[in-house]
Amino acid sequence: MKTCLLNFFIFMLFSCFAGEENLDLIISSEEIAAKIKTVGKQISSDYANKNLSLIVVMKGGICITADLMRAIEIPFKFEFLKASSYGNNGMSAGKLTINGIESLDIEGRDVLLVDDIFETGNTLQRIIKELSAKNPSSIKTLTLLVKEIPRKTSYLPDYILFHIPDLFVIGYGLDYKEFYRGLPAIYAFPENKAPF
Image (cartoon, rainbow, N blue to C red; front, side):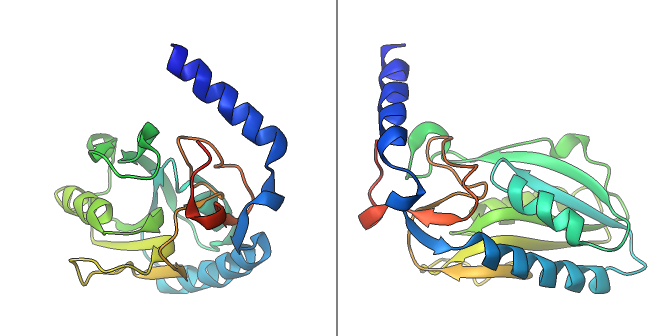
Protein backbone atom coordinates (compact mmCIF):
# COMPACT_ATOMS: atom_id res chain seq x y z
CA MET A 1 0.00 0.00 0.00
CA LYS A 2 2.81 2.39 0.89
CA THR A 3 4.48 1.68 -2.47
CA CYS A 4 1.23 2.42 -4.35
CA LEU A 5 0.76 5.70 -2.47
CA LEU A 6 4.37 6.70 -3.08
CA ASN A 7 4.08 5.94 -6.81
CA PHE A 8 0.84 7.92 -7.00
CA PHE A 9 2.43 10.88 -5.19
CA ILE A 10 5.45 10.83 -7.50
CA PHE A 11 3.19 10.66 -10.55
CA MET A 12 1.05 13.58 -9.35
CA LEU A 13 4.17 15.61 -8.59
CA PHE A 14 5.59 14.81 -12.03
CA SER A 15 2.28 15.63 -13.69
CA CYS A 16 2.22 19.08 -12.10
CA PHE A 17 5.65 20.02 -13.40
CA ALA A 18 6.04 17.93 -16.57
CA GLY A 19 3.38 18.21 -19.22
CA GLU A 20 3.57 17.40 -22.91
CA GLU A 21 6.02 20.26 -23.37
CA ASN A 22 8.57 18.33 -21.29
CA LEU A 23 8.30 15.20 -23.43
CA ASP A 24 9.94 14.56 -26.79
CA LEU A 25 7.32 14.57 -29.58
CA ILE A 26 7.88 11.63 -31.92
CA ILE A 27 4.68 11.61 -34.03
CA SER A 28 2.07 14.38 -33.97
CA SER A 29 -1.67 13.85 -33.69
CA GLU A 30 -2.05 15.40 -37.16
CA GLU A 31 0.34 12.85 -38.67
CA ILE A 32 -1.53 10.01 -36.99
CA ALA A 33 -4.93 11.27 -38.20
CA ALA A 34 -3.71 11.62 -41.79
CA LYS A 35 -2.20 8.13 -41.85
CA ILE A 36 -5.31 6.55 -40.33
CA LYS A 37 -7.47 8.15 -43.01
CA THR A 38 -5.22 6.69 -45.73
CA VAL A 39 -5.05 3.23 -44.15
CA GLY A 40 -8.82 3.23 -43.55
CA LYS A 41 -9.42 3.69 -47.27
CA GLN A 42 -6.92 0.92 -48.07
CA ILE A 43 -8.61 -1.51 -45.67
CA SER A 44 -12.02 -0.61 -47.10
CA SER A 45 -10.73 -1.53 -50.54
CA ASP A 46 -8.86 -4.67 -49.44
CA TYR A 47 -11.83 -6.07 -47.52
CA ALA A 48 -14.66 -5.04 -49.84
CA ASN A 49 -17.20 -7.89 -50.09
CA LYS A 50 -15.49 -9.80 -47.26
CA ASN A 51 -16.65 -10.68 -43.75
CA LEU A 52 -14.33 -8.42 -41.79
CA SER A 53 -13.84 -8.79 -38.04
CA LEU A 54 -11.76 -6.01 -36.52
CA ILE A 55 -10.10 -7.25 -33.32
CA VAL A 56 -8.31 -4.79 -31.07
CA VAL A 57 -5.55 -5.87 -28.70
CA MET A 58 -6.32 -4.03 -25.46
CA LYS A 59 -5.31 -1.82 -23.83
CA GLY A 60 -2.72 -0.24 -26.11
CA GLY A 61 -4.72 -0.56 -29.33
CA ILE A 62 -7.74 1.35 -28.02
CA CYS A 63 -6.96 4.78 -29.50
CA ILE A 64 -5.93 3.68 -32.97
CA THR A 65 -8.87 1.30 -33.21
CA ALA A 66 -11.38 3.96 -32.14
CA ASP A 67 -10.14 6.26 -34.90
CA LEU A 68 -9.66 3.50 -37.47
CA MET A 69 -13.24 2.27 -37.01
CA ARG A 70 -14.48 5.66 -38.20
CA ALA A 71 -12.14 5.63 -41.21
CA ILE A 72 -13.24 2.20 -42.50
CA GLU A 73 -16.06 2.60 -45.02
CA ILE A 74 -17.38 -0.99 -45.15
CA PRO A 75 -19.38 -3.08 -42.66
CA PHE A 76 -17.41 -5.02 -40.06
CA LYS A 77 -17.75 -6.70 -36.69
CA PHE A 78 -15.79 -5.40 -33.72
CA GLU A 79 -14.17 -7.63 -31.11
CA PHE A 80 -11.41 -7.28 -28.53
CA LEU A 81 -8.96 -9.28 -26.49
CA LYS A 82 -6.47 -8.31 -23.83
CA ALA A 83 -2.73 -8.93 -23.98
CA SER A 84 -0.22 -7.69 -21.45
CA SER A 85 3.49 -8.10 -20.89
CA TYR A 86 4.52 -4.81 -19.28
CA GLY A 87 1.85 -4.09 -16.69
CA ASN A 88 3.41 -2.21 -13.79
CA ASN A 89 6.92 -3.35 -14.69
CA GLY A 90 7.50 -0.12 -16.56
CA MET A 91 9.95 -0.31 -19.45
CA SER A 92 10.93 -4.00 -19.39
CA ALA A 93 8.61 -6.73 -20.62
CA GLY A 94 7.43 -9.46 -18.31
CA LYS A 95 5.31 -12.57 -18.81
CA LEU A 96 2.85 -12.38 -21.71
CA THR A 97 -0.76 -13.05 -20.81
CA ILE A 98 -3.65 -13.15 -23.31
CA ASN A 99 -7.34 -13.16 -22.37
CA GLY A 100 -10.55 -13.14 -24.40
CA ILE A 101 -9.71 -15.35 -27.39
CA GLU A 102 -11.93 -18.12 -26.05
CA SER A 103 -15.06 -15.97 -26.47
CA LEU A 104 -14.40 -14.85 -30.06
CA ASP A 105 -16.61 -16.16 -32.87
CA ILE A 106 -14.46 -15.71 -35.97
CA GLU A 107 -14.88 -18.99 -37.87
CA GLY A 108 -15.01 -18.26 -41.59
CA ARG A 109 -14.37 -14.56 -41.08
CA ASP A 110 -11.54 -12.32 -42.28
CA VAL A 111 -9.74 -11.07 -39.20
CA LEU A 112 -7.79 -7.83 -38.95
CA LEU A 113 -5.90 -7.73 -35.66
CA VAL A 114 -5.04 -4.20 -34.47
CA ASP A 115 -2.26 -3.50 -31.96
CA ASP A 116 -0.31 -0.48 -30.81
CA ILE A 117 3.35 -1.44 -31.27
CA PHE A 118 5.40 -4.22 -32.84
CA GLU A 119 8.70 -4.89 -31.09
CA THR A 120 9.92 -8.50 -30.81
CA GLY A 121 6.82 -9.84 -32.58
CA ASN A 122 6.15 -12.36 -29.82
CA THR A 123 2.76 -10.95 -28.83
CA LEU A 124 1.24 -10.82 -32.32
CA GLN A 125 2.63 -14.18 -33.35
CA ARG A 126 1.22 -15.89 -30.28
CA ILE A 127 -2.18 -14.24 -30.76
CA ILE A 128 -2.22 -15.25 -34.44
CA LYS A 129 -1.45 -18.85 -33.48
CA GLU A 130 -4.32 -18.94 -30.98
CA LEU A 131 -6.75 -17.20 -33.35
CA SER A 132 -5.88 -19.64 -36.15
CA ALA A 133 -7.27 -22.48 -34.05
CA LYS A 134 -10.72 -20.85 -34.38
CA ASN A 135 -10.68 -21.32 -38.20
CA PRO A 136 -10.98 -17.80 -39.61
CA SER A 137 -10.80 -17.37 -43.39
CA SER A 138 -7.77 -15.11 -43.01
CA ILE A 139 -5.77 -13.20 -40.42
CA LYS A 140 -3.90 -9.99 -41.10
CA THR A 141 -2.37 -7.54 -38.67
CA LEU A 142 -2.11 -3.77 -38.31
CA THR A 143 0.09 -1.87 -35.90
CA LEU A 144 0.39 1.80 -35.21
CA LEU A 145 4.15 1.50 -34.70
CA VAL A 146 7.00 -0.81 -35.62
CA LYS A 147 10.12 -0.34 -33.57
CA GLU A 148 13.32 -0.59 -35.61
CA ILE A 149 15.22 -3.16 -33.56
CA PRO A 150 16.91 -6.48 -34.32
CA ARG A 151 14.42 -9.34 -33.93
CA LYS A 152 14.45 -13.09 -34.35
CA THR A 153 11.46 -13.18 -36.70
CA SER A 154 11.20 -11.93 -40.27
CA TYR A 155 7.44 -11.47 -39.82
CA LEU A 156 6.09 -7.93 -39.97
CA PRO A 157 2.50 -6.65 -39.69
CA ASP A 158 0.53 -6.36 -42.93
CA TYR A 159 -0.36 -2.71 -42.28
CA ILE A 160 2.18 -0.45 -40.58
CA LEU A 161 1.42 3.19 -39.91
CA PHE A 162 4.83 4.35 -38.64
CA HIS A 163 8.37 3.06 -38.08
CA ILE A 164 10.15 4.47 -35.03
CA PRO A 165 13.67 4.22 -33.59
CA ASP A 166 14.46 2.16 -30.49
CA LEU A 167 12.72 4.41 -27.96
CA PHE A 168 10.24 3.69 -25.20
CA VAL A 169 7.17 5.61 -26.35
CA ILE A 170 3.96 6.73 -24.67
CA GLY A 171 0.70 8.33 -25.67
CA TYR A 172 -2.17 7.54 -28.03
CA GLY A 173 -2.87 4.33 -26.13
CA LEU A 174 0.69 3.44 -25.17
CA ASP A 175 1.50 3.60 -21.49
CA TYR A 176 4.16 3.68 -18.84
CA LYS A 177 2.93 1.81 -15.75
CA GLU A 178 -0.64 2.42 -17.03
CA PHE A 179 -0.14 6.20 -17.22
CA TYR A 180 0.02 8.51 -20.29
CA ARG A 181 -2.36 6.52 -22.54
CA GLY A 182 -4.50 9.61 -23.08
CA LEU A 183 -1.81 11.81 -24.59
CA PRO A 184 -2.96 12.79 -28.11
CA ALA A 185 0.31 11.98 -29.92
CA ILE A 186 3.37 9.73 -29.58
CA TYR A 187 6.06 10.91 -27.18
CA ALA A 188 9.28 9.67 -25.59
CA PHE A 189 10.74 10.63 -22.25
CA PRO A 190 13.70 13.03 -22.43
CA GLU A 191 16.90 11.02 -22.88
CA ASN A 192 14.63 7.93 -22.98
CA LYS A 193 14.58 7.87 -19.15
CA ALA A 194 11.39 7.12 -17.22
CA PRO A 195 10.34 9.69 -14.59
CA PHE A 196 9.53 7.16 -11.86
